[in-house]
Length: 265
DNA sequence: CGGCGGTCCTGTCAGC
DNA sequence: TGCTGACAGGACCGCC
Image (cartoon, rainbow, N blue to C red; front, top):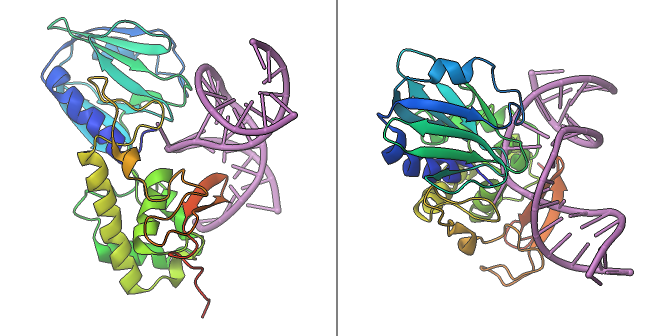
């Protein structure tokens, strides 16, 4: 579920409950989610204050007072609830000094909790993520543009949904080699990425199955998809049928009329 | 180094 | 009403 917009809405929802609070207790119901949670993490952050809640790509970072910060990754199915009844798959529970209780739930256990480390990839909301930066990165890559967008070491935060939607807005075929895109296409793609992320954040993210905001409400951006998950349904632009293809093991959705294959050279 | 397939998990849905 | 297989928002690892 969680790409940048989903993690951002979770972050915004958590801030009023956790920022400035002191952690009183950390309960690990599952010491391993995707990876093993460091054995000393719970003890290290107990009685420490949460200074700030940041986000880098799809990772949410809690800066702690006097100790290393912690990094949450929501994987495919992670979500947070505040002051809520226990549920199956609540792997981490955090109790705060004001009596508040944060529950991290992740059925598929692809999520992770670790110390915050080096930040890789450029976040789309980083001022460094300019159109010219994107163009320069695309020039270096020969692979299909869709899989390049999913490479978190280049841009971090774009996932399967927003890669598909941004390419649709830009009318670029997902199999186009990244380095064959024109400067103009790079500039348009840059704008489309920012637009689709902005719109999705304003809608509370996309809820396909697991994503909910901290208050339990679902996001609404899935109602605005042009192509994602719409195989066989009419393209909102030309009425032709949306198609699905597989790239690097992931489904890609696109409109073959609006996003025609680019001729080489 | 780049690119791709397999793998880690649970849950749901379509098709038989 | 089962059962089975495909598939799901992600990202590591190992292989060419």
